[in-house]
Image 1 (cartoon, rainbow, N blue to C red):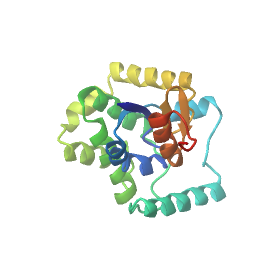
Image 2 (image 1 turned 45 degrees about the horizontal axis):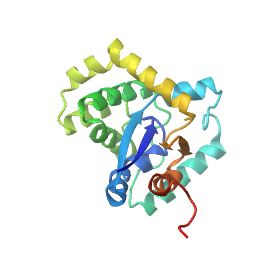
Image 3 (image 1 turned 90 degrees about the vertical axis):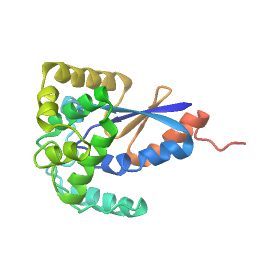
Image 4 (image 1 turned 30 degrees about the horizontal axis):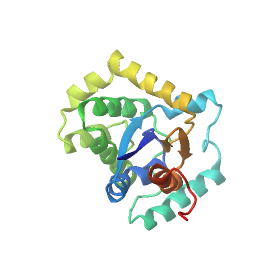
Length: 202
């Protein structure tokens, strides 16, 4: 089965569009998706790249673009969503724990739905408790483990690996060493995973 490494950071706005449609795309195309959370803020600080902060024109475009694309995917976010997230790192530490325990995908979708559809910032209350309870997890247990040095180190390790692969933003898709950045490149990544090319089949 073909596979795609899906590198993402909870805190990326465009990643909302990906996480809620990716499972269906994977099933339809017979592709295995490896969900790989990392700390995109660390990458952006290193690159001195602050994409939308204090850039009102660019921010307005981002929200309108997400709104347009959401309609295409039959999603109904409340735009603008709270942004940026002060709890970005914690949200992704919880995601790393979820990856270890097998509930990463459910948590990621739940926290994004609450962030974009209920206006509850991911990585903060009441989003954290609501998302974890929704997927059947004990809140105190998860927070205790997610803030442990072990999980902190694991998130750091994943972030280092993402950088080494050339990942610089979220969402990104890595297929056979090729990096595809942005929700609008998901279909390109699928094509590459299936055919190793973007060119039409002759």
